[in-house]
Length: 334
Image (cartoon, rainbow, N blue to C red; front, side, top):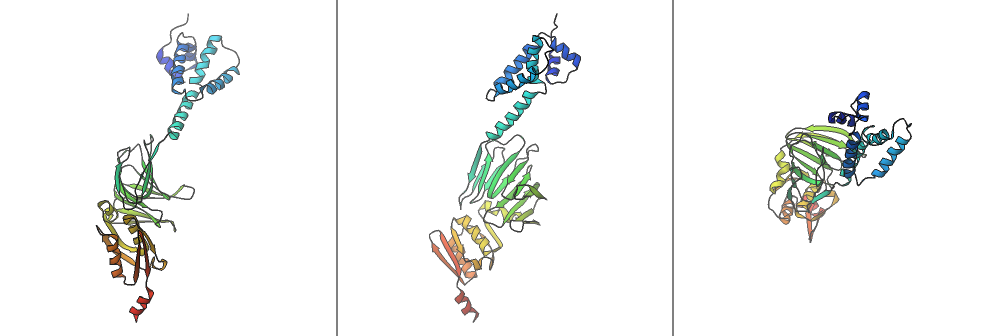
């Protein structure tokens, strides 16, 4: 007479941590097939959207190729046992399809600012973001199980909620910035010749990527440090800085410190939603230091003209043309 099956024994059989003698005990039990059928039916419900018929067909082919050394009862039993044990094939398939489906079904959202606009919002994990003008962040509606990854174009200030199990990664065109929980600012505009990462608190890892998107250099930042990556020379420079200068835009300020004329124009374009056409000879000819609070664009340009008298500024709606009156400069030198 067949003996009743101990549930603990069946559980160990299910996970293939059982001796050969104990397997015989499972084979000779009354409930073994019923238990396996129940597990199969439950799993079948979960995976009904996948091609289970094909999975079962392959298992059947494998079983049919074995020598017939069991009774009809044991063959029926092994049909289910193969699914759950040798070597837990269905579990592996379930794991793979679950991961695959989670990736393909990931919903991506986008936050974007126009020139002259700034916004603040909260990411799905509770991290706070301030997005500067002419910038864009792409992020998933829900972060993955072991990673919080977003993409940035432009400038943003992050207050990251700490989670040791889920690193927070900001991806730019040339850099990856990895953190666990910290406050930092990233500036990565396509029109700039550099990417800046400025750390206020915590710790971040700045990773430089090559053209194949592989990491080939890393640097760790501590508070009040800045990593500046120059896109043309591919140099990564670390400096101690006054971080308040680089996050003043959050309070509506723009601090210009020893910046070239072309850099100043790029900043003004983003802040005031204008297009500035600067004569090429002026790009690196003059450098400026000043702070903008509530001034209008024409006020700022008039102040620049007072500093650099040879400038010629022409307005055409939202287009501003800046050149240099070379004849006036010659007359001044006489």
